[in-house]
Image (cartoon, rainbow, N blue to C red; front, side, top):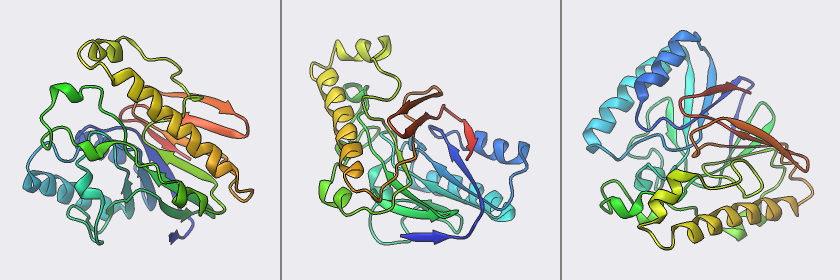
Amino acid sequence: MRTIATTDLYFLGDLHGNFRALRQLIKKQKLKKAHIIQVGDFGVGYQSFLSDLKAMEKLNALLESAAIHLYVLRGNHDNPAYFTGPVPRPLDQSCISFVEDYTVLEINQMKILLIGGAISIDRKLQQEGVHYWKEEVLNYNEAKLAAMRNIDLVVTHSAPNFAPPYHFGELVMSFARNDASLVDDLHEERALLSKMYECLKQEPSNKLKYWLYGHFHSANQARYEDTEMVLIGVNELVKF
């Protein structure tokens, strides 16, 4: 667990490689001395490693000048290899951390659990290891979940099935016409995220006041039991 002193905290939606949009948001809002948690689909792995590294170095220069630290969660449109292994990881910078699943950050006296991964609905159209990775899916680890204590906020890429959106749209169904198991796999993924919620709630110290996620390319909010479920839209930066 990494403990961070009191600071402004922001959450950032899917970027899909649009790092220029993030730089513009930081400049437009004149952000300083803050921490940003990005909810996955950052967009690394779709170009060469050297191109990704150059993009991270350019972004890091701005973050460093503004005293901002960015934590990047693993989405389904990210190469999973950049989010595992010894720290610093291949694309890590002084102000950019690619976080491993089940990392816990403590910011502003809140314990924040980070778990990435999801299914790509276009998986049948992509070349494995180029724009699609078998390891990109949700990594459900009940032993790690059961060991969690005092969790206030959870960040995942996808969402439990009791959070919006509640139904699969036409885009999903269009890909499902050529992917016979897609809908069942998506239902199973969201059911696992719901099971994740229930597992965490079994521990009384886990308050789960908020659950933030991206993946669905829109913004929405709903309440489930005592937890505020917050869907963050593409390129959306939300101050917490």
